[in-house]
Length: 134
Image (tube, rainbow, N blue to C red):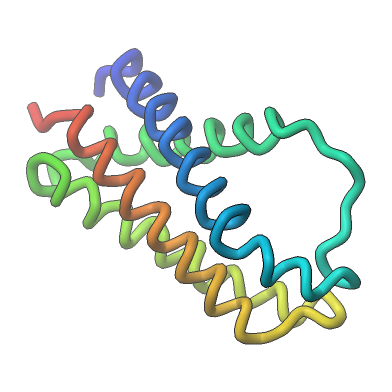
């Protein structure tokens, strides 16, 4: 495994994830979240924290992708397949929200699970295009 290439892949994937997360959660789902002020409240947060988290997730995902690269097809398709399975784990984790947060609508677990799955397919595809098979 090429560590430098894996980290670079994670950084590029993190930037892609940050952009897709913004589009999904702010532009598409923002008005839905506004309907539930009791659930979705927070103080002012530095937007760079979201980018930092996206970078950390993507770097971890890229290292795992690099370690298993030979298992996945070439290019976007192989990376997207990896992203689907990586995202599938996170998809099911989203169902804890309805159990943990009082007033969290159950249907939003499906929405957010779908969002995380779509995001990871996109990020995995980006990783597949950058980190080529040896």
